[in-house]
Image (cartoon, rainbow, N blue to C red; front, side, top):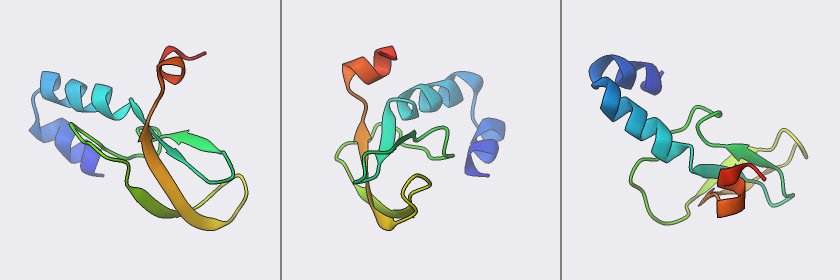
Amino acid sequence: MLRALLKILLPTRAYASIEADTRKWLIECPCGYRRDLWEMGGIRYKAAGEPRRLLRCPHCSHLTWHKVRKKTQKELEGL
């Protein structure tokens, strides 16, 4: 919902910049399962640090603290 609002309010270039920056981040469960932050509906723009979010993992079904981290160069390249 927030992304839909931002898409309406922001210029196309600004929204594209937010999307590009957010796609550099992922959420990782301690079990090793990873998800793209943008695909989950999240936004992380010009951010630093690696916060944690309490989420239920769709892979292991446990409610755990997931790490939000930047993708490695290999992950960005899709290898």
